[in-house]
Amino acid sequence: MITLEKLRKFFLSLQSIYNDKKLYLSELDSAIGDGDHGVNMARGFDAVINDLNAKPPVDLEGVFKSVSMSLIKTVGGASGPLYGTFFRKMSLAAGKKNEIGLDEWIDGMSKGIEGIVQLGKAQKGDKTMLDALFPALEALKAQKDAGKDLADALSASAKAAQEGAISTIPLIAKKGRASYLGERSAGHQDPGATSSAMLLQAAADTLS
Image (cartoon, rainbow, N blue to C red):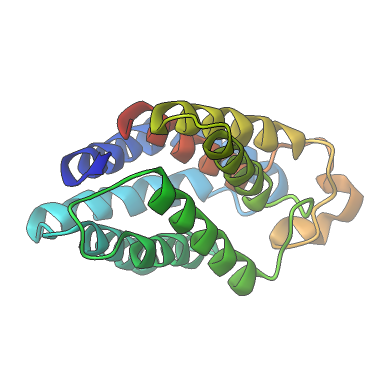
């Protein structure tokens, strides 16, 4: 089960990962965007942890809501609203519980992805974070249908997300700043898909 303590470890892990990888993510973004994705994600998750420490939520819904608000307030560009929306929608699936399982995680991912689609007007294949998130969700559902447990499902989800991020390299961007480059956006891995894959790897490492 995913508990309050595990969820806290998940976000602490993300803070560490995005600080460690901020230069790498910003390098990816420099090729097809503003070049600040890594710095923005690191700043955002520093704020996430500061806010969680300042006012610890009492249930999982509160954690996800706090994270959402922190990211929307502090992350520049499109990433703040997109990741903020993702976690805000996940709060709806978690509810006022102290622990959730695979079913609620899948529901949260589904709601989160729907929120990103509605906000960003993008789909799989547009060279965005959705190219990591959609395969991850499909992997989760397949693992559940196969009777696998939470650990196996999260591991498969992370693997699918990583493969999805790599799959963006040959794509031509259709959304966001990268779309202004047209065919020149091909040959570069999408930074948003990459940070999403990092997020789901952290989930596999900390939540199961």
